[in-house]
Length: 374
Image 1 (tube, rainbow, N blue to C red):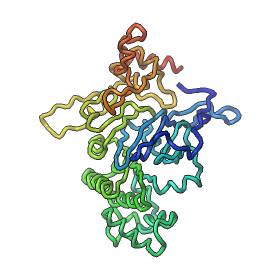
Image 2: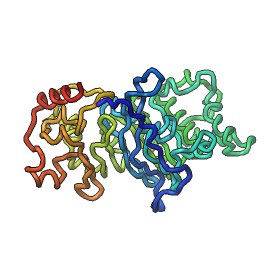
Image 3: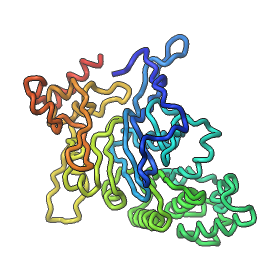
Image 4: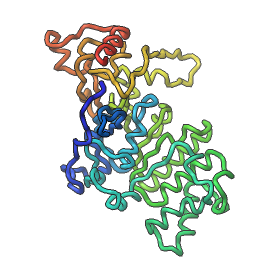
């Protein structure tokens, strides 16, 4: 529901630079209860009165040299999550720890020393490159700004990065419009890696490319990860790509985490009804195998006015009465496999007298949600 007269920005995180509680030695990133709300209505005095919950209570950890994939439908908050982690959006609530340091409340100048360690590969390789700069200047700009290497070594350093990313030396003085989509994405990758980052957020880096070029870019990312020990957050719609490149997967829906766990385990045994529906759309390269595609009924709710309880209950074929009334908690069903669904909550399923476990049809759930939000 749209929340009136509430300012979520007041949910301030702890003082910046505070150390995270007992971080693991190989832990690069820890996100705790991260929230990003965008104000969509204000009162007479300009104070926000309603918010769009783009990211709503997301928590996870990421170890050095590993890759976590973020999947979900368009508009579920994947890109906003990545940009909020990089602090390109102001954080509404929660905490972000980078290598054990709380960077949640750091200002622009204090964040500068972390910018080289956290980089972003944009989705569109056509609009993310300046048409007025040569490839050498695009890649070398941040190198000069952050003084990664001495001035007289920048040219050779950029050429070395270009070679690692599959770009020829003669491309140094050319402009972006002279390249194909795959080559432009290699330039974007080279620009991100030129400042020696530890964490790279890949925001659908292959969605605008042909399938054959996608394979080249994905293989390049894996090769660079192995050589340079990079840590990735990989945002994508393509589940086949996610399965190939990631170690863990997080499934998002309307700003919430529905399921998270080891990639192989989730693909072998998806638990949440939303995850099952998503994975049913993955094509199987075998003409003799019949696909059991699950078509989700109902319309995607507005993130500005989400349903009460479980946000997915208006489209869920296994919806129960309790789903419309109570938000599910995250349950560890098996080792490192978490799901937010009442079907796997032992406390609820073992006490049917205390909770409404009667099944609801998709139409009934959607109608009930509409009445609640009026």
